[in-house]
Amino acid sequence: MAQTSSTLPDRPVRHLNQTELSRRWSLSPRTLERWRWRRQGPDYLKIGGRVVYRLEDIEAFEAAQTRNATVRLSGGAA
Image (cartoon, rainbow, N blue to C red; front, side, top):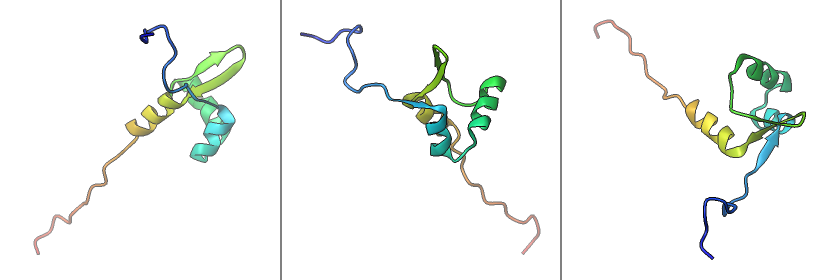
């Protein structure tokens, strides 16, 4: 049978809860709560009373936080 958009993906969706994500990033769970209140941080789902983060959203957020190191040179003549 051909796979359609209504069938499940080959890779199951993985979710992390607030505690698991806070451990992954070495943050306080309260930091994640504050980020949700401020509408910062990764996208999340609220299912019933539970907050969960999809792994793909976590990885996208991590990728967006990547910064390039820059070298500052002194402005004086050598």
